[in-house]
Image (cartoon, rainbow, N blue to C red; front, side, top):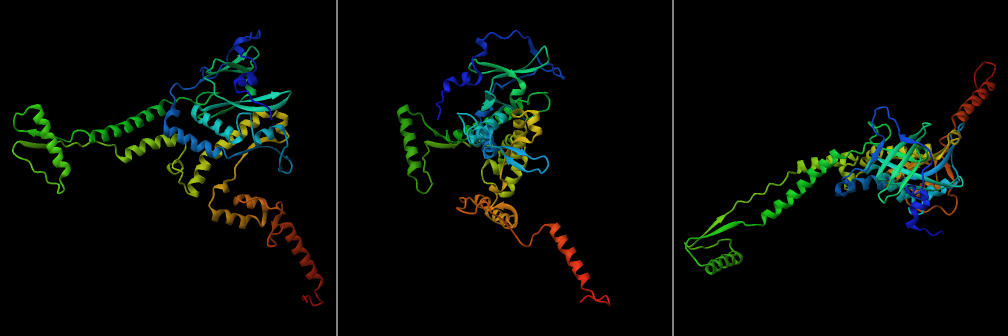
Length: 418
């Protein structure tokens, strides 16, 4: 196992800091966009991740996405058969895309950055033409540049002062809210920050309301002029009577009068609080049952189709477009992020799926055991079971045709079948 020096991560990935290296004699300028905007991305100044609501919403989406299984596959153009390719890329995707992260951590990281900044950049590191790692980046600023030949370059500015510049086509760039800007996802969190501020104000108001309810509840009016020491004795005597009273009745003489202060702190109603919180949840596509981790099978299927599946498709297409040449893609090479939706189904649904699909040779024995959370079979795990009640339509047609011919041969002279 090779040793990993985290301190030299930037040097290992990008080489020397480009700020300390003399640039090549090639003029570069900002890439010209059709809408006239500047092709610049920068992380939003205010950190929305500090909110517990935002953090939990992102965690729910990123956690379920981290269960996806990326694979390098090749699809036969004639038969459509998919085959997992034993390649360097497949080894990276299977376990550790880079020396610092496992596959699940890598997916969790890129989804978290995507949901936070609406953009995520992944740098594929190559050595001698072979891929050696996939590194998710979070720059403070990104500039899109072009040289005099019209080639597009991307320049990263990192918080530690490092910069890196490379051709845009060498970077995997995933985006959400991709509409107004021609190259970047919309990273404007102003609306979200206003909602978070309102939510924080409500929470603080609830806390202050509770505090006020424990403050002064009443006034003991003493109807005579007393020295300060005598006033203190009257208060202590009054508190002692309140504490020791078993019947709830408090006797007082003409010298004292208790005036009750009606403290009624206004707490925000549940509907208003739910409305504010749902606005935050809806931005990240997380329902209340998913947020609380108490969802039904139907509720999770809805969450999967609306949130997880689109992200899996985005990752599959984004990785395929950047990790393979046009010729390699034409030959059927692609990265696919697989997910077994049945893993989230109920036990009854899983058993019924095995019962219905296994006789159709959809499942192997090991596939069925894996779905039920059991270890692979010691023998015969690759066996596919076919029910005799299900046969190829061509065989059925041939059987019926041969039977018809046989009956014709058995007809007697009167034309009656024997």
